[in-house]
Image (cartoon, rainbow, N blue to C red; front, top):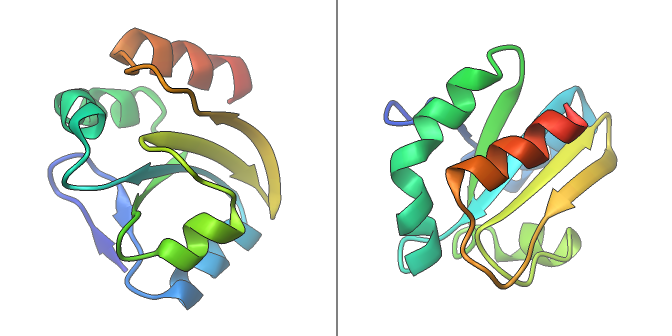
Length: 112
């Protein structure tokens, strides 16, 4: 598994690595894609968001590389954030509007 040095998120390389992260511990999954304008808008804020929760692992999932994982988690729009604890979804932040740093932080503070 790699770590994104820009934002501190874990980046699984295989579906097996992804599945192991889903099943054990508390993780925030950030579903994204390089071509996504709203993802690009949020990107400069990700390092600050991750640093706000130092005890939580954030996981960056490229939608195009992990389409099966997105389908299994019913991710139909990006960017999406899903909090998973020991295999159970705790909460998700998905809507059609562009997400701001403040909105993401508010969501995470509510559920973490």
